[in-house]
Length: 306
Image (cartoon, rainbow, N blue to C red):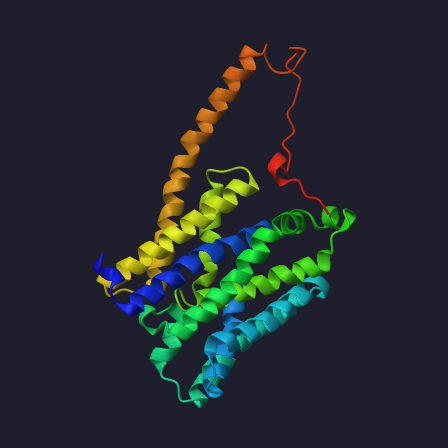
């Protein structure tokens, strides 16, 4: 347990836990909306905020948060109102954000080491001020993703259904975008801006291999995210390897293992269901073999109320 003694590791572990919780908590809604790469785009835009922070001699985390939120809102508006060439506008936003960040950091006199620490994460550079910012931002993310989970699930699953129930769809869509932007800045000191999207998506995809309900997937994804971020952080203390890359590769390893376990578990469930069906007199109430079960896109634990 000697890794708990250095002050920088204590700060890094606190940040790692918060990243492991917040990234999958937001990522589950992005995956549900088929916007798995949104975090990657926000990460590109956040580079401009980091560059502005260095240029203006302010905390890069807060400046990156501000710029990321503006960029995420712009992405959501382009998605909602853009026409056939909306993809070009998004590409300009993504790559312009990255280029602007590199240029601004150069103008501010920042070194390549500073740039790489934000692109790929760096445990030794997490300061007390960074930890304070990460804690406050993570509290906001958890409050939104847990407190409004039913409304956010409804919007992510079916916008038309959510609109019919009277939910403010446009406001909730913008809230998801803003929360994703905040999560990117929370995670950039640990996994880096270029790899944060993986931590939003991979734990969720891994959890989906074993679970069926939204609630269980949410919890399992957070457990996986926290486990890989803590493990990766500890590994980087003993081995001279990049923290972001280590954490992402661990998450992918978990995904591969759970995918391998999912197939036999699915076959076992099928056998149990077949035995239960045979014990109740065969398929269908009338025993004519014509009864067909229609899967529902929502389950009992996911009912949404306006």
